[in-house]
Length: 256
Image: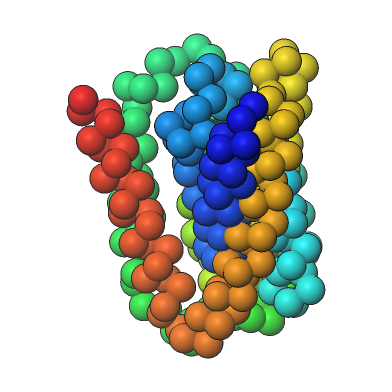
């Protein structure tokens, strides 16, 4: 591996880490294209396996940072993550039986609906004191299963769906949903990475460089997220804007 490829891996990891730290999502959607088209990983399966490991590690580093900032609602996060892993196992099994490319158009439309829901004004900007209780626990389990299933079926990290899912299930503030979502992103990524590692489909050298960049990018992403959380709408607009951009990309890709 050349030093130029190494620098590109670090730079790509920085972009992914920044996205994860800022909005809790975008890791897998960004990582695979960056590894293939920027870093130069020629084998798509190796790019997927390497990105899964790198995104999981970057998400974990960002999770620790958000924990130190006090933005993670651990009990809610654990219920959602465990449910999501079960859903991901089911979804990935079904995904092997269905041609997923045919559903990219519908998935992109789903993301547009999610983005629009994030723009809808919410009273008070969310509850920063939310706790796991008998009312929100069933919703966390149900939505966790659904989001995990979709993530597993389409082979994505799910961060763009986890954050809105946590908000819908509990009414928590978006900064708490971003911090809490990273536990699920880590769990989903490790599940995929383990599967690919057992098949020898991870480039460990590139993965380590990608992770190093992700830790650095995540630091700045977290700082910006905490700063923007003072505003009741700034993070929502950024999150929705990125969702729309990814959805448009997927619509173009599905129609080509």
